[in-house]
Length: 335
Ligand code: CTP
Ligand code: MG
Image (tube, rainbow, N blue to C red; front, top):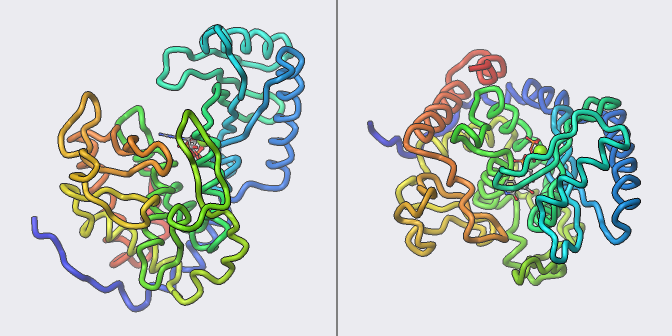
């Protein structure tokens, strides 16, 4: 198959701005949703601090990184000194406590890569995952939230891309496609690479924030209120950016060599990461570097079969935005 070179997007693409933005608006969590979320966190905090007075609860993931929708689950991290005990014992005890306090459908999932307690809050209908001491997730949640404050187009683009990925069945890590987190990183990197840039590279700037996790320094410039007009020189609209995003991933990204890195604010090479061959289960077919755990490739879940599916979806999306009369419907058609 021929790799298409530089293609310009259709001249009338801005006509789809209202449609796309109304989809984005419809995804935003309501005030009621937010207040139910904080009620849930308050009652969780009460239950936990009765048992462990020195423990701390952190919200992470889309309920705290501002990329949440009204369908997002609630991700919570319990920061606690486990001493000589084990994470599994602690999770089992946590499950007991939550059941005793009347939370419904509480289940300790201890065999997962990241062991969690999962529960369904009957009051709000939220599904809630609680993990232990996953402080990298707390750090990258803040990083994403800070990026989202720099230019509003990030939130719009990433929300639409996440929505698209869910409906098209390419947001299921257990089946070899990408996490929501990976899609948000792809959007940040994409906006760092626009000309003129829409986002800076916060980790390449003088750090104003540092959090040390497992001997790794998570440091970056977090005074984003000082960058209010950063992306203003770039006037690209959401339809243009969405098309260019899919076009990039369909036809321009070099899957053999490229690694997406928001840490560096540019594309780096698999060679320099030593990600050229399969190591264990990490195939490195599509490479997205975690900003703080730089040995983590968020694309490691992708295999030979699912990369084909994902790339076909990128091509389909680019094609629809380029040619379809009513792309806002077709693009999000459930697969
Ligand atoms: N995370 C991570 N490493 C991964 C996957 C996830 O550190 N490989 C952390 C990130 O902090 C991420 C959070 O777990 O924000 C939740 O991941 P995910 O469910 O993929 O993203 P959400 O933003 O919560 O998306 P959704 O709205 O689909 O729940
Ligand atoms: Mg989540």
